[in-house]
Image (cartoon, rainbow, N blue to C red):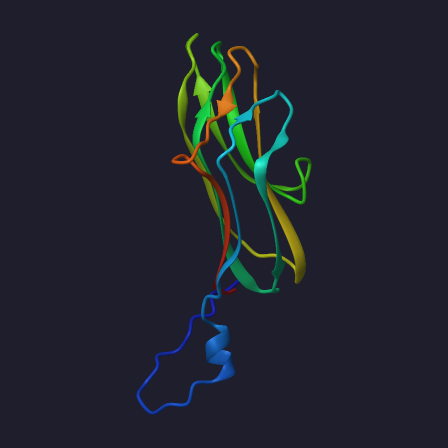
Length: 158
């Protein structure tokens, strides 16, 4: 889709509805969680990571899914996060992976940022995760200072 930028505003000009509709509309949905989540080998929705909002056709939405600390298994393997539509088996919009090439737990922050458009209507997005092995109890670590976030922002017309 082509970008539809706004016009320059000048003193004394009349602001139109079309110009106003080209402005970003800001935060559309937000979910946070401070509850850690123990990973499984099945792609599953992570605790608290679901948002629902009403999309408008032909607008761009910036979606951010952030996990402050993902841990890998303590064997060779990986931990992945996913951004999905509707539920854990829905359309995938992106993923992030931590690969562990040693026999100790590896950990890092994980983030997915996507710019998406949707058909008009209700949209549910979920943050999901899995691990290749449950050896060592790999976890998405969260607490009061390490908060997971799923954020949807309207950034303007397509």
